Image (cartoon, rainbow, N blue to C red):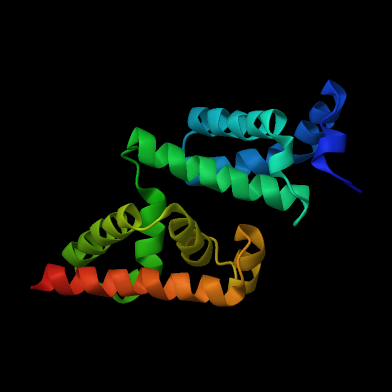
Length: 176
């Protein structure tokens, strides 16, 4: 059992054991979000470097694997925004969930939905974007998301409503 990150990260062999144990989860998450092996490797290394440089950031409120998973998500989202990666596949997944693409036949509507999701994610704060990603792409429950991001389930619900409200508002503006 992991007592604390500070205890575990005290020696190089400890970070090596953490890396060995959790790297698969971190890199899998990064690959899913970034859709690029090279970008995923860089982001994954950034996760472990951040843990090594600031072990006190892990407060023990969740398991170390949950913390690393959340950190990987935040780092990947930040990388996507900073580098303006053209591959928008995870936004497409959100658009698919929001618009139920199976029942849509009009390609223009799908394209507009994808653009809308990109615009909404660009306008919302990082935590709300992360929550929307967990909910619409990963299919996590609000309770699971709450434990991942350190909020109450009610706060997660409010942020999802805020995200959908932004979507509706942008749809109305786009339709006008």
